[in-house]
Amino acid sequence: MAIETERDRHSDAALEALFEEARHDGPRPDLVARVLADAAAVQAAAAPAVPPARRAGFFRNPPGFVAALGGWGGFGGVTAAGLFGLAVGLWSPEAVDALSGGQFWSLSGGNGWTPDLSALVLEESDV
Amino acid sequence: MHSDSDAELARLGDSALMVLFARGDPGAARVLTARLLPRALRHAARVLGDAAEAEDVAQEAMLRLWHAAADWRSDGPAQPATWLHRVVANLAIDRLRRSGRATGLDAETPDDAPGPEARLTEAERMAALDAALATLPERQRQAVVLRHIEGMSNPEIAEVLGIGVEAVESLTARGKRALKLALDGKKEALSHGD
Image (cartoon, rainbow over all chains, first blue to last red; front, side):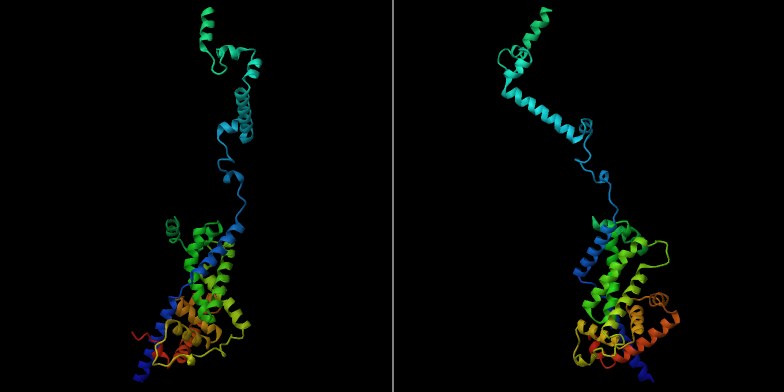
């Protein structure tokens, strides 16, 4: 009987050692990756559509001065007009002078670039 | 970044993590995977005795868990771990029945393993355990794995297997006796010897 008990104890210990070893079995990294990919896919499929304003960045939510010009479209129009005017002034100052009735030429002192402020001063002193 | 938020999430219970998962928190998925995937895999591996099949079952069970998250109630009676083990048990039984291995009668016995004079590697010891488990009837096998490897309580096992607590006690006791018998004569080889 005592021998049986000793054998039982030995069997129990051997079995418990096997159980203990089995408790440390873990998943391989690629299985973990597959499970996490499944999780991400389920979450993505279940995610409600996010309103555009929440996803908005700089371009979808312009700063105040751009918004005041009517958004990026208006801002682009004003910028294009300014650039066009600058180009006309640089490449064809005579046309601008003609449109201003010759004031641009006389104010610039005849060089066609920078207005000559002395003309204004003289004009003021005349008055 | 992940480790900080994951450490906070790790303090939450499984049910709370399920609710967070349903709200789209990827950290909840990581923590739940770290907690539950090893359990699902061990359960499947010991019942099926096949590593590749066990991985398939564990992945499928986890996928069902993710789908179930949308309707999970953090204050509900169901525990994600118990729920997952039930899914693993059912998937494993389906596979065993489809492949004709349900009763374990045609399972490979440990006789092919080296004799007592040779020390077995860890993989061989696990193969011997799987082979011995395969000789047990389905429910005995599941009960033994859940009780002695996963350390679940008898009421938890009863919930997983859909039987009474007394039936679980009987299954685990008979299963353990049968396992010892199946492994008898191999214990020298199965011991680490160190």
